[in-house]
Image 1 (cartoon, helix red, strand yellow):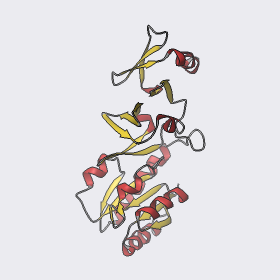
Image 2: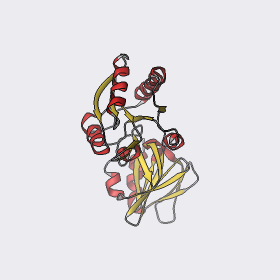
Image 3: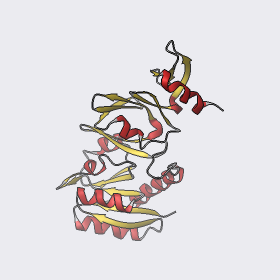
Image 4: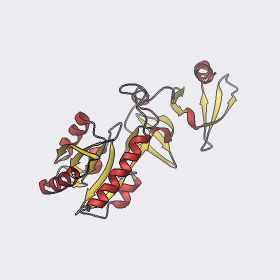
Length: 240
């Protein structure tokens, strides 16, 4: 399969070098370029690339600013002249981190990794809705992550925000629970009560509660209560 690639870099010569290398790689198709944060975000929205070759430091902001709030987020390989962001990039689950000048063999290896990920990714269950294998970019202050929705354990209301638990992390998003629920596959995320969405794949045990609902024990050991109002829907959704 051919990867549709967007190049984002404020330096024209850097973009040209990457485009020239990609032209020699039959597995790659450069579908566009962008030179700043707003242009990159617009190009991602319109072109829907499989992979973004993304510079980190640009006059209008950082590569992390480009990704902030995108859902689903494309696969990303950072290309930069600076090596001090490598740890932050890999904490965000970037596919690779290439220091300029980019070596063709390193770029080819990064493309192979991106192709492997694309082959494993399933299409979302419906247009505009995000499935278990879709990746989103989460940002909380200076911390950033790429997260597949299947890794998210639960999402809960916290005032005007939503807390998202995944892996061993918890981040705060400036989004309402209803807004998040509207983008999530209902076969994966269940509204257990007014305040909590739970990933049904993360449920380890189910027990009746004293309030005629259920108590769900998740794989991380936390418990979520299914309200009496939601109990019937839970039974119908989980029944054979």
